[in-house]
Image 1 (cartoon, rainbow over the protein chains, first blue to last red):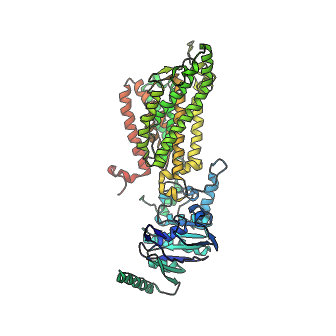
Image 2 (cartoon, chains in turn blue, orange):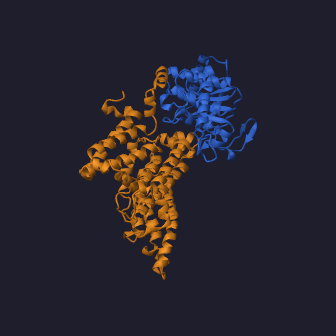
Length: 243
Length: 380
């Protein structure tokens, strides 16, 4: 993948399996975002191949909408919900349940939204229902709603782009619990995270990207958090020596 | 960021909401109470005007174009945009409709009248006025589309784009009118008048033996506009298009991420607004049976004030059709009331301005109290 003369990604071989949370780590500008954007259909690479469920995908035919059709959903750092809108609108925005004239079946949307809140997200006794507006939710709860939405729409692959950024400690815990739910529901997940402790705790596999290349592939249990930190520091030192 | 209530407080507030609180939270109820309070005050202060039915019938007859524009503008403002060009679209579409009826009087259609007798011309007027309806709505939609294209595709902020096009549409109207005003003589004898401007329940509103050229009664326009308000309520609150507008007004970036075609939605919105302004222009001309080169120009401030007094968010992301409808009534009743009390339009303007500010402060208090730090609300 190249932007003009700048090669952003090179020889990247990256795979996610069912039931697997893959943590993607690397410095700012390492190429994590570019890789994610290619997978979710936002960017088209200069060259390379993409397989989804073992089927080759033609780039000319690939887009965000196509990714949705193939059950790939993305939860962004923040701002993936309309703040003044009630949750039932947020769950179905862009893919409403409508009659043939485009009028929304509000009762059905609310019913399903309440079900998602209870069963998929696990909001119980916190005073949140389908009628609540997003502005009444805490940062962690908002990420929970966004993750729950992705799960409801049967995403097989959920891409989490730094979901805990700018959250209070207690809220971070909630989001990590939501991510744990993704695993137990049998889906795949790509999890971009700056905080090594979080990603080390949750990921089944860690992929380290550095200057556009995959430099390590670490399975769960291969390294302790301490060893991981040392490993990344060593990479950093090597980079500085080269420069 | 908005303050977050903890779970316990949220639960409690959901359970403790009394019947009164729920009624007050229903769309339009608070603003309706304000209207009633104003009317009661005016009945006491100017009983001559407000205790009979004449003032109310006259409001129904004369203010439908403003209501139509306020309804349309509600959608525009809810999506975080503004349209300053609708008064000029009214002028233009008034002219277009008037021109089809008085084709003998405009330089670009008068060739149709050549070599015809006055009787033939009169018969043609009645027929061409139907074409005038289609043309006024079509031209309204088309100039709205141009507004939308400038905003969505070229990327000019709507306040600037529609300010610029306001000059164009107004100039175009005066040019196509040949710079003159003219009457739509005998339009009230056509079938089209009967179904658009005619009066209902005239028997209820007779006074003495006076025979008016246009009898008092509920104008059919008022019924059509009420039906339009219901339709627009459903479009804003229950239709995919309305939901897209709310999300765009809330946060255009979020709208894009959830898969809303922001540009296409904006173009559709301005096209709809143009068509509604076209309807307003047409109704105005039908009622006044007259075209003047400033037709509709006075409606800008009244309509914008009504939408905000009604409770549509100044930040975008929410809008109330019921509020805007009642908002126009509040503004109009204040205007009429001040004049009926012998105070004149200058005082009316000042009162409306003060009501406008108070209403916006009140709505902000509900929506974003932290923005009102100056008044001691919010902690930041």
